[in-house]
Every structure is written in structure tokens, then in C-alpha cells.
Image 1 (cartoon, rainbow, N blue to C red):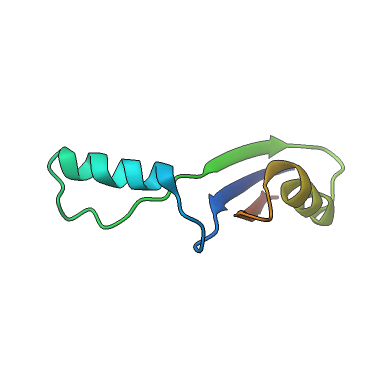
Image 2: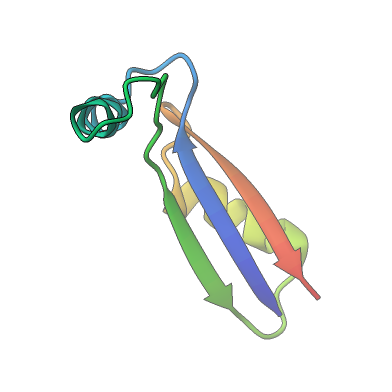
Length: 76
């Protein structure tokens, strides 16, 4: 089974990397850049795992639930 875990900062959390990307875009000639958010994407390939187990791994190991949200995309 293949899965992707997309981890992003919560909307209510300041994203300093996103702010830096937005400002750099403006500096490089895109004054209309409104926002940018920086996260991470983890690709997993596992055998014998359930979707519930993958959610547990994503929540407890790959993301920090205090400041991040995750999305699990399973490719069957």
C-alpha cells in the first residue's frame, strides 16, 4: 500500500517560513503574492497496514498535533 501524509501548520499558527516565501516572491517581481504556507509531504510504502494504523502513525509520529494538521491520502 502506498500513502502520502501531508503535514501543514494549523491555520491559527504563524508560519514564518511561509511569510519568508511570500516576501521572497514579492521581491522577485510578484507583488500580488498574498500568502504562502510551508509544510512537508511524506511518502510511505507499507505492507499489511490498515488505514487506521496509518492515521495513528501520521498523528503520533509524523506530525505535531499541537501546531500541525495532517492529511492522509491512501493509494490502493
